[in-house]
Length: 570
Image (cartoon, rainbow, N blue to C red; front, side):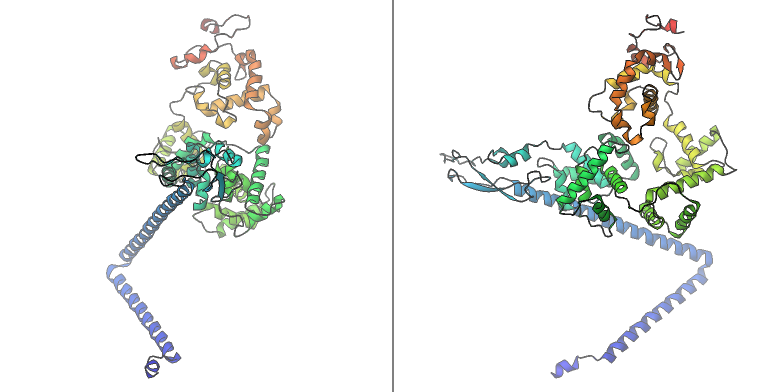
């Protein structure tokens, strides 16, 4: 006991130790202040500030470097975890090993594990499924070296029809699976380890797909935009139709029931979407998007956000008080790295959606630019266009690789006097994106509208929506947007009901193939009508590369029922 009493401390000793530590820290702070004051006096005010700012920059760069290294290690850990998960699944689904020379009794049942991708067979991953071996499957030992007896796998067993139907269902292709996974990783959607196996088949090269998707996810912003432009034809674009919205509601309800969530009414899903923290489990929206393979993950999330918007959310025109409150909230809310969360806070205060607040702010800014007296009207001159291109190049964008959504047009407009950001962007589109393309009228390029209509009619049957049509391949040398606009003009002229139909229901009520059929039925009028003028033929001064387009029109006749020649067209 005396030894224990010697080491015991009293409350007074603890208080004195705390006071000593505080006095020591205060002395260190005073010494540091004196040292900085003395150094500031030796170097001077400006030199001291310069060195201090450089030190802060180095410190910030070191923090960013450490953050990137930590992120890279985390990504490596995620890939390693995915590979480990795949190896575990492969070990579970592998057929059992049987020693050589051992006879199997007929009619003996064995236990095997079957992994279902989306629960179609009703069995959960890892559930035991009992199948029977055929009565004549007795293994007889052979003389000489023994070989492994062949055991019937789960996919070959015909005793369980439900399991057989699951394995015989049409699997998703590897390319589609890689695109979906890369698409999810690019837009930083949650992808837990236990949900990754949901998007892969048994015969897929799991490691290669994960590494490819990871490379796409870590790409720069320019490469990400380029990848999305290359693969955008894999999914439908544009507004959701009424049938797709119903399909989305059904997909959300089915996924909620699969997760044992109460969703007897749409209001329940709205409450789940508005909850903080989120009540839906991890991987919920990935499963919802998988039930709509024709749409990308981000489009499904955006449309679901619109459907699950707040019940009391304001809609309709904005008042002057709301505009003033919007600018006040923009000044009160500091700029954040994630622009989505900033507009979400403003939308919660104003009682509107974040997209409505953002679009209203952009409309007000565009109106202010239009009302400015120092802004010049009309198109930009050659010197101004060159100034725009120099500003874009100075900001680090090459003319051949720059994309419109990535260029900060407000920064470009600051270096071009008396011009707005919209005017600079329009000049860039005309000068760079349409450079080298044929700028003649539509009729002078294609000969007639008949070439475009027949090209559309010859497209394969997998082109269901207008967004899936390769407009850049229909008429060589013509801007794809102009070809699509021409088809839209013809559709409105020959089908006037399209003008009064809502845009969201336009493709559902008037499919583009039905429009082509109606336009082709009036093919004689299509040949004569071009840009609201009656023209027989434009076969004069046609480039040699476009002569093939004129061959499809050789069977058409003029007013007198005879073929029209270039001489007659003159």
